[in-house]
Length: 421
Image (cartoon, rainbow, N blue to C red):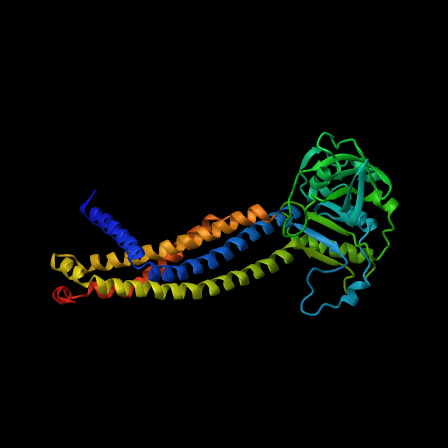
């Protein structure tokens, strides 16, 4: 190890010891100053951690729903500041006829499916029952658009979907609540609105997500089965069609092709507005990202005030420390210590004090993530970029807060400093 490295190591060691000494000697003053740093880092990293975890969930949800999927619906997801709901109310809902037209004529689509949800249904199996279950009715290609993973069993065959057989796929929570552990659901018959449905598959646990697409508390049945038992002309039901673009096809190209086919099928005149909405997941994800950006900014602003107070506190500690050690500084300089050595000694000490406060703030965030994961469904993890941001922010605050006191110490005249009382 070279001489300069030995000096740097010794400097770092002395700065750590001096910082610990400050904590011991001036407990109240130091704790009050460090609390500002801790609270600031906690506010910033807590917000960043929650937002980052939510962003990950949104991206996972978008990936499952498909960022290359167009949703043909009655209502648009976003219609600007003015939302003429009365205009959209008169629109017809997409139906199985339009599904067939799109499936037969689209050249840029890899899969097309219709989707309908019937909420708050009661399921029964012998003496067991489950309430408030969503019945999801889909056509055959739904599994090509939404990636379903099975604990056991399988998806509908083409014959089951096309003829509307009484087959059903159940979610993880439905399986847990409806069937005792010793009973295999596959092949069993459940009752839905008095109809008997045979279980052919159980979907793996998906958990709640930000776009509410979980199948855990739902069952999936063929759309053509629901057509036979439910009046789909009811205004309360709003099915929609999902269209996935072929690999390499731009989503806008698919959108324009769907628009042309549907306008022709619905016999809309050239000057007439569309009587349907073509929605994309990117509309939601873009709005959510904008919201996350605003929350991030709020976290930095709130944390920034706490860091400002903490920074002034650290600067105050360093000014007092310089004053208390003026004689020692004079002796060191008289013995040959360079200005940069004295500067770095106090600067490193300030950084270490800020790091202690920052680590305490990170520890509080970690405790919060453990509590959220233990008591709530939404588990939050302290990510590496959050830790790195907390550490770097602490270092920057330490450098800023400690620079002026350290500079004043490095410029002291050794003779004047040694005579200081």
